[in-house]
Length: 389
Image 1 (cartoon, rainbow, N blue to C red):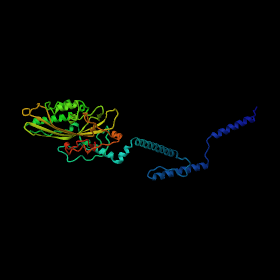
Image 2: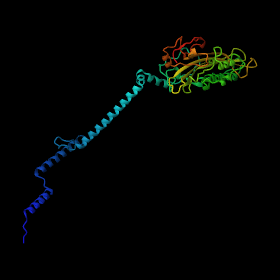
Image 3: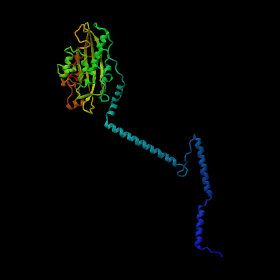
Image 4: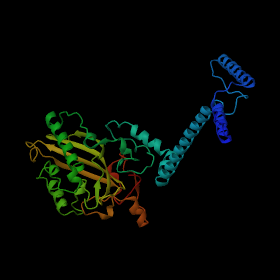
């Protein structure tokens, strides 16, 4: 017996058939096929045109559907935008950092604009001066004014091109003179150099310690020589001043910057009588200093010019201690030394900040401490003003 289908079952069956029909592939309509074929032909035509333009790829056409191959292009543009934004941010950071540096150290810009930066580089590149063999005809040329620093203590000074320490004390070739053989003359020259080093370059001497090595070169039998300076070391006075022969600084007040003292000068020899050789030394020493207080960085330079004449005698002809030098003459002058504080046996450099705080400037005749064209004997006897240091 046939079963009769209810209305509810027929309705469910119709819904299932409709769903399966929707999921089944459909044959494209004739219109859809025409559109697809047109787009394919246009794409091939653009590709051929692109290859004719020197191998460049096709460009999106005006008739392309929205977004057609534009995704990657927009992504590339977005990537370039991010790169530009990063570059702008980096540039802004660099500008801000530069402004901060200028605010902290405006001299960097000022020095560049005024030419000091270039002048400093030229000074660094300049080679050392040739040794001095005769008295100069004038003072060293002007050097651009510049403030010295602990790293560059000779900045702004003619001494920047001078020799370092003992390298600036060169000996002339020895020759027999005054009945003294060449070997004794060479000995006198070498001893005078040792005396200059021990008196003006030895760190212990500069710190105010007893210059024993220098004293040992002097004849103890000469009353106005070694005994006189020894009295000055013990009790400095106007009548016995160790500064006549030694460069000394009070270690409680100042200390040397680094370990370089600039030196320039010359040495010669002659004889005034039989059994004698006299050595003439004329040297200028430049000392960079800071206050002894820890952390001090303001640099001041003291410039000392010293001329000495030492004699070595033949003990068979002159009363002397064999192998010892006697003092014939000693003269000295110092630039940037507070000579009002004389009598203490020390050189006393002054600093710009001290003069500014005191509200007073230097007084007395103006002297260029680097000028080696004249004689120390012709220097002013009163306190003078150094034109530079």
